Image 1 (tube, rainbow, N blue to C red):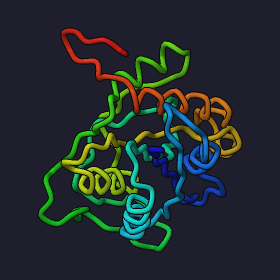
Image 2 (cartoon, one colour):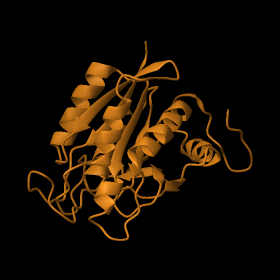
Image 3 (cartoon, rainbow, N blue to C red):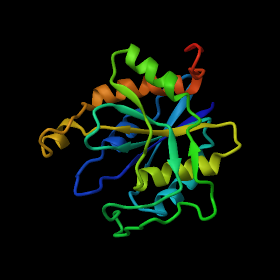
Image 4 (cartoon, rainbow, N blue to C red):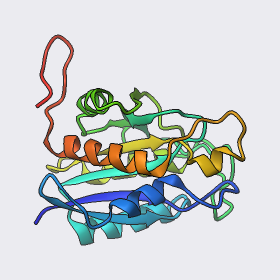
Length: 212
């Protein structure tokens, strides 16, 4: 049976929970599009996150990879278009590192695009009533670090891979007045659909194209 690798992060920035890991582990073991979901928690630490990702890629040998991260302040499921080769941390990671203008991969290309059908995923999520959008930036913290590292490692391979940001959970938003949130059951249901589309949909292109 083929596998889908879903990653989430440990809590960071003073939070006690990270919705990305709560979502990933809720999906662990499910069968989606005829494939088994394997969830892996990544440390919110530059370098160490990629080491854990490397281990997971080697062990799981996925056909599809969806890395997920928390984006406090966002109100929807944001499918990231591009990862850039820059680590530039506004706050320290969980090991205290705070790189400034450093490459994720020395001498690597400036950027990688997602190989997920991101517009098809967004269209399918919206049609099902879930808030979703294509995002043009994954930031420059550990989320982008993992997204870039993932795409770099899988370049040229027949694996669909990319990154999705999600909002706070309601219990987090209660500590951040005015911040949007989505409850975990909604995130789980939406992520199931996103993974189904990630595995099976053809991308929607400008000037035509269909969502299979």
